[in-house]
Image (cartoon, rainbow, N blue to C red; front, side, top):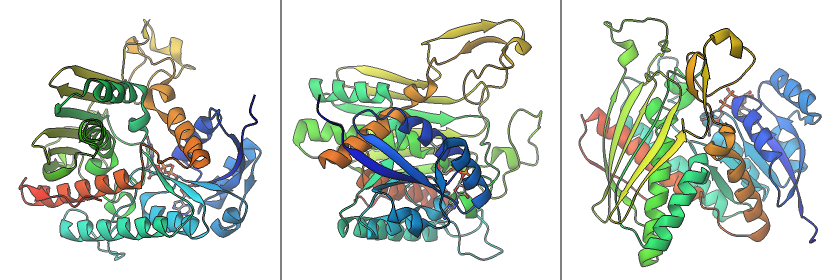
Length: 394
Ligand SMILES: NC(=O)c1ccc[n+]([C@@H]2O[C@H](COP(=O)([O-])OP(=O)(O)OC[C@H]3O[C@@H](n4cnc5c(N)ncnc54)[C@H](O)[C@@H]3O)[C@@H](O)[C@H]2O)c1
């Protein structure tokens, strides 16, 4: 058997996403991944992460970059551009978590996500994307955009159907929703670069933009790109008349908790993407692809691969069932391997094999860039009560 190549890797950030990146890294099979260590602004968290995994905690990003070929950018969005550009300048590959970049305010104490002009976010977001793309062009490293929905097995099977049947995709309808993020910083625009429209909406949106690329490449040799977006946002849990019964997170400061994007493509077809933080019953991640010759419902999570009935909640006190479920009592759609359905291990396997082969990943920097452009254009639209806003594509 041919000997596997080895790549040295570092992780930047030591929180939630750094944990699932670690688990997915253990399932990369085409490359020996040698994890050198971790660096994070929160050094205590980095030390604990390193200790639990038997790796080194680095004192600086630069020191980590000295020792690796690849870095995983698992930091809050405000740091994505800085980490990615630092890696690319050293000719390292960088796997950038979603969203690829973002506008986290003007740095002032009084910055408020409800009241600033969203045009500012769009202008900054595009400039940031362009700096990242420029750094990638000048580097031997590349950006892999870590949008796991692209690699979710149901979305990849749909890619195959579109490619082999020459389908015309007329409407893609998708949603990511649950009852609110666990991350304390995800309440303020200055930390998250926006609300649910960017935080969750980016997942189904990127999957829709991706499948329209696939369709265009398969039928005409070039991707079908988005041209306009109309959007609405709301802050339902911040309404004075919201009646809190304790099931839905409600401490958001200046971000949206409900959003809808209506995207038109250059061929006249449509995508509608919903994202919210007000949906009970566990995570609700799905994509419905309506084509001229087939229809596919990608049930990312929940799905019916495994359904378990538990008569007493306490029976399952030591059992993880499904993301964001409110109770373990009664019937639960409990995916036997949630990460697999979500696409995390497939994503990293694909990225590492591209680093070795030199192939362009399915989820590349241009797809990440089009997502940022579409979402911040959508915030401009929402500010204008849903007027259609043109989308710059990359
Ligand atoms: N793909 C997914 O399903 C998914 C899920 C959750 C989070 N994410 C993304 O992952 C990213 C991180 O989110 P998280 O939930 O892991 O956050 P987190 O708060 O749990 O962890 C963030 C970590 O990054 C470190 N950090 C922050 N800024 C830094 C910087 N500039 N340089 C170095 N370290 C820095 C912090 O010290 C901390 O260790 C976000 O972009 C988020 O959108 C993706």
